[in-house]
Picture 1 (tube, one colour):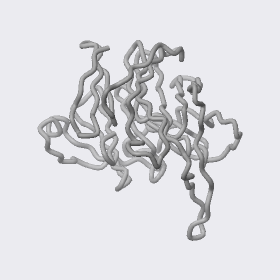
Picture 2 (cartoon, rainbow, N blue to C red):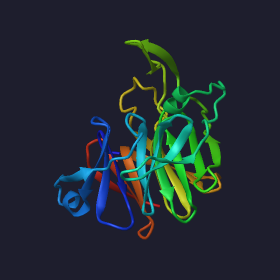
Picture 3 (cartoon, rainbow, N blue to C red):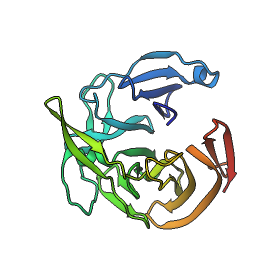
Length: 249
């Protein structure tokens, strides 16, 4: 994620899909133009039933998948010019046992997929929680962190409709996540939302694909986004100053 955008790169072409949170639209841009710092959306990626329901997108081989609130579905495949295809139906595990579409919305976060494991990982933004989901069976593995906090929210009435409102004492969980064939790297904040730099993290928690905790990396910088380069054995991060920083694994 950068600013109000999420990006997804598919394997088979040189097109980058960009989810614009502000416009609530998925745009298609030429990857080469982005590499040359030019932003020219080619066209809209249109799929029935996605409006105002997406939390995040990512590439999964040649497929585009999304995390969000799709009635009783949490993860879907988005198909150009068609309706979405459900990949996983489940409600995130919670001590409060509140089962509703607002709970899906409260447990929003970042999603990344891995072709080798045919699975994805969800890093919850307002909870100390990761979810590893088998994209064939739709079965989730919930990983609670040591602080084990959950989203703090209430459902309010606005203009005759109902909406989710986050509480003032809510905490930020995971800021970003990336993965390779061996490990999951989750960037963690843990700060209260009213704290300075709450949307940044300086701790990377590492897990394997069975959900086992491996180690922590403590960073010297506040980071908002990360990615892993397995061949070079490095993590690349974007700092609060907008600089790109490399960390050796």
